[in-house]
Structure formats: C-alpha cells, structure tokens
Length: 218
Image (cartoon, rainbow, N blue to C red; front, side, top):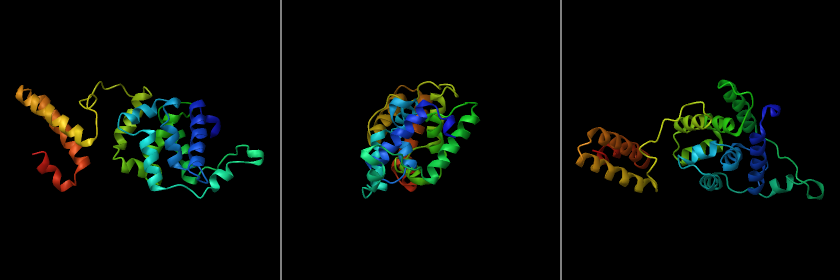
C-alpha cells in the first residue's frame, strides 16, 4: 500500500505523526490524518475544505475538545535511543482509511494515492474522530467531497456560487444573504431572490433546530 503513496501523501503521514506526538497520543488515528490533510502545503484538498470553513486550526480545536491531550506516553514512544524519531503505529481505522484512499484513487483512474485521496476517504468514513470533527463543524460531506474532486480536476469547476463573496460567521452570513435577497426583490429580480432565499434556508437550517427553520425564513 505504501508503495502507492505519492510524495504529498507521504508528507501527510509525517505531518500526521507530528500532530499525534504534539497531542501526546500513542498512535496515528483519523483525526491526525485529517490535520495532516488540512495542511495547505501538501495539496489542493486543504483549500477545498477551507472554502467550507474547515481549516487546520478549527479542526485542531475540535480534536482537543473531543479527544484531549494524552498522558505524554505518545511523545516518549515517538523517540528512540538518543532521542531519534521513531514511527508511531497507525490505528486500525487509519489503516482502513489508507485502503479506502487507494480505492478512491482507483475509482477516478489515478495510479497513485495523494493527500486529496486520503481526504476523500476521510469524508466517506462514518465513524472515528475525524467524522466527529466534520459533524461538529457542520460540514456537508457530500459537498466537501465534490469540491475535492473539483480541486483534482476530476469534476469541472462550476463557477462562482452565491456564497463565494459572503464571509463572516454564520449569523453574519445569514444577515448578508437576507439583505441581498431584499435588494433583489427591490430590483424585481425574482429569480435571484429565490436563489438567495434558498441559500438563506440552508444557512438557517445549520443554525436552528428543524422546528424553527420554517418560521425564521417565511
């Protein structure tokens, strides 16, 4: 399997080990693979997820909340004699992620496994701490998967979306979308107003319990 990894994927594993050691964990798990994949220096997948608000810093914060720091044994196990670095083992789930990454690459006729394929595999995994990070950050994993494929030039770039020019936290984005919707209505551009209303509904659905969504966007 490791023979199929390209330079970016190998670098991701090195970064993942560093993340595990930094948290004093005893093995490389899915959350460490995710942090490695979100490093912008090793491929286009990190930028694809950043477009959905998923960054290394935000993911790291959630991982500390979910898993916490270890007892310090991970750092000790990561050092051999004379302080030389020694590899941490991959968790069983992390091993499966690498196998799934191989399948993701094969499915799109790629002959080697890159950091983006590992990210695609993480987005498909239903379980593990990386999955919980996506849940806590309210990531639409299907959309994230699509954006990584766009970054790999497997899918065509769909062009700018209504949200591309809207920044800020969720509340600020909702207010900006509502203002844009009202402006479109004032200009009698009803087609654009309908699009902004759908965007508003999607954002409110991320913010409010399902029972409140209809009343807030009526």
